[in-house]
Amino acid sequence: MRMCLTLETQRILEHTLSISPDTDKTVDEVLDELQEHIKNSRNEALRRRDLLNCKQRQGESFSDFYVRIRHISEEIDVCPGKTCEETQLKMVILMGVCDEELVQKLLSLDTTPSLQDIVNTCRAYEATRSATSAIRAPSSQINAVSTYKRNKQRDQSSAIQQSSASVAACRNCGHEHEKGKCSAADKFCSNCGRQGHFTKSPACPATNVQCHNCKRVGHYDRCCRSRKPAPQDRNTTSYSRSYHQKTKNCRRVGSPQKTPTLTTVNLTYGGTTTQLDMLPDTGADITVIGRRHLKMLRIASSSLRSPPPTTTFTADGSSMAPALGTCQALLSIGSRSCTATIYVHEDVQTPLLSYGHCQELAIISREFPKPIVQVKHVNKSVWCAGKLLRIPDALSRAPVSRPTPEDEMACAAATAHLRAIVTINAVTPNDNSPPQDTDRTLQELRDASRVDPVYIRLRDCVTSGFPTWQAKAEDCDRRAAARAELVQEQYNQHARPLPRLRVGDTVRIQNPTSLRWDKVGVVMSCGRSRDYEVRLPSGRVYWRNRRFLRPINPPGVDPLPHIPEPPVSCTDPVTESFIAPTTPRRSERLQRTESAR
Image (cartoon, rainbow, N blue to C red; front, side):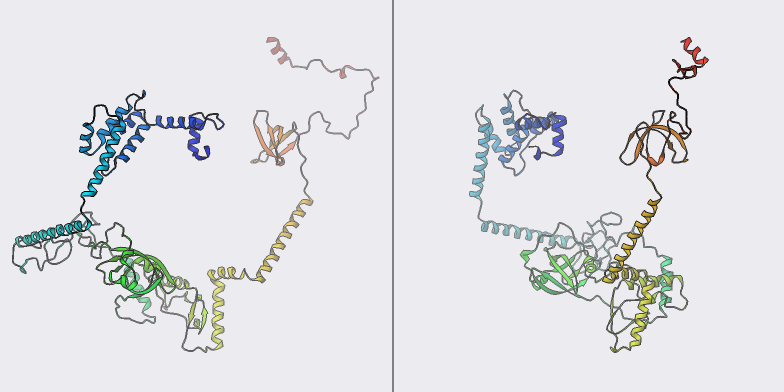
């Protein structure tokens, strides 16, 4: 059973309920104590209030309602003596049933019905009512005809009301006039920006629209009066002026103003790939197609998924009609592809490609809307026919005679942009290029690779996998290992290990800061890594390595063992100098102190 309990429940059993893992209690006894603990963790009055306030929900069957009552009653002791529990449950059922006819039927029963009688009566009433509703319900065809008639009558009445209201007062100007003589025909609304109605008239589409700038209701964002115009940066103006000054000396091809063109996208759905012309829209958040494009893509309307409950707005801020559905498809252009959620709307004529999908398909750059710096000057000696060449560092200089700091910054940005291209396939009109051009191009590439850190890192990564360089690397590692062994051997020739200390030896301790041997202690124990526990006379304990400890010779050992000492024979008379004193000698001050005690 413990394998089925969580760690928190096991802790409650062990610490709160004092039930150890090796207890002799049965599983039922443990579960009863755990259930009692859970019941006591909640206030009894709150559980009784939940039972008395238990009501049958709208559309809930009596069986579900009765199960909910029994579940709540099991968590509390409705009657400790088990004498009035049934009476209280009958009262809860009578007060919680939502059908008034069922309540009247329960009140009409005998004075002392049992709980099971009330439950059976409620279930029988519910079953009878369901059967009666099924018998009396009209058929689906009759119901459809009745619904159609009601909707038609409602539409006719609403059309009559609208026509009478238009005759009474115009929605554009608010006055009564003949058709085609509205005074607001040439007026512009300041809330929506459209022509044909006065401000705050019922015809304004921005009546219930909230502005995102001032959070007020009644006008679009573009018509908000509290919006301040974006300030112009002087540095930007000066930089653009200097940029035009820089590029005026370069070769430049002018092009007329272009209009957005459609892009052919390969759309794959259900294993079928179809080409569809779509308009890249950098202001769109979703990819949209129309109903007529479903037939082109061979997508059935019944296979569409329900759209999310969100509101879609157009470019002018007005809300679009709800989408008919969505579908998942694979979009691809060349070698780039992405999975997209496509929304289907009724009134869309041109398919729109969203901003995110334009980036994933490489139609626009990842840094959009940042401008792309274009370099107009390229060294001709770099290009060679039919070769995959890398762009050298020949573009590090500015393409003007006297570059300014702004020119250097623009040139550095252009160089970084061009280096993002790994390889290029240069194609020239003449495929038979002279060999001297090829040699010069290769020499320029070699010169650029020697000074460019990017080329150096790339060269190290590529050449390190060659067999020749692998053998050289192995030889270098072997020589380094042999050199390390030689250094260790030379060091060990003049080194000797310090003798081990024993427990009870008196040692001096070196201060690691001042490097002075200023403390004396006794070795108490030995560690595993040549470390020792040393106790000082004050009681402090230090752990020190052997190199920071110096043994002290005991005072009883003769420091000069080379001086011979004549032995004392047993026959020589014993003088007073060789008689050991029975008591240690004390000074007169200590003797006076002891006598005073």
